[in-house]
Amino acid sequence: MNDSTVLAAGIRRLTVNLDSDDVALFEGTWPVPHGVALHSYLLQGDRVVLIDPWDDGGYGTEELEVDLAELGLSWKHVDAVAFTGPPHPGQADRLRAARPGLELWDLPTPGADHRLGALSLVERGGFWTVPEAGVVFTGEVFAGLGWVDEEGWAEDLPEDTSRWFEDEALRWFSARPRVPAALPDRAKILAPAHGLLWGKNPAAALERAQRFGDWGRGPALDEVAIVWPAGPDRDAETDALVGGILDAGWGLNLFRVPGDDPTAVAAGVRRSSLAVVAPGIETGFLRGLEKPVWKPEGVTPAALRTGVVQRIRELV
Image 1 (cartoon, helix red, strand yellow):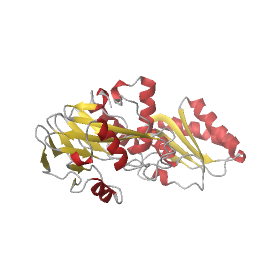
Image 2 (cartoon, rainbow, N blue to C red; image 1 turned 90 degrees about the vertical axis):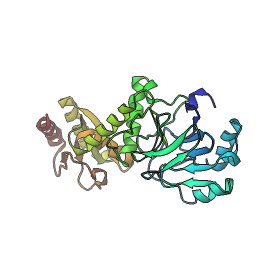
Image 3 (cartoon, rainbow, N blue to C red; image 1 turned 180 degrees about the vertical axis):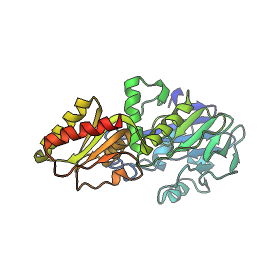
Image 4 (spheres, rainbow, N blue to C red; image 1 turned 180 degrees about the horizontal axis):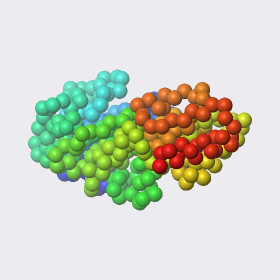
């Protein structure tokens, strides 16, 4: 524990980084080749509350006990747990076994208001918030994937690292596309259940979510997503499509299936303005997206190359 885990007076972040050895598929869906950082948040006022206690990858009540001990606390000091999303199956029983008499506060509902002395935990805009500090616990909204170092603040990252985390956030968003209408009034810190936090410019997180949402409803980046069968017998077709896209000066998101991560496919198609999908490929990754899709059938590699260039020109 160190000062980088303090969000505001009486509010602290407890983080564990999981890798692919801890969890093969995060939430049963996302491969995590670059890990995922789970956050629980500790509120210390007249009462002690945990937000979203860990419950994945072998990290749960016993591991939280260790982190609490570093702060001079134990489960017996925790009065309540609040969730930003549905608890995992059996999690409520595990929490009550660790702390008999523990209060479990369900998802934030309009009017929910818990007084903790100098702090309060209330519902604002569908989120649990601590209005005195401007901290908003966003759960799966504004969340992402990837291992988070001690700092964990989105605004402190260099440009190349920021771009990488944005790709991981898009991979998460593409399966859980939630865009709030607005942030709660006077929001200063956005604290999701996993991924980077926002503390200098929380509006940037909302702007990013809106951009991700817009990409699903129409033109996105000047990129093409190719979703094509794997195997050497299809390499000539793939090479022709890649060549045509490069001829047109556009970016490329290339996926070979089966084999490539379905969450990466969904993200790559969302960020592209054109999807080129081979006949016979299951197109569940297109669900909910509105963008041009070309499904070429019975054409030669040469025709694929000229065809993709023509379709890019139609978009310009």
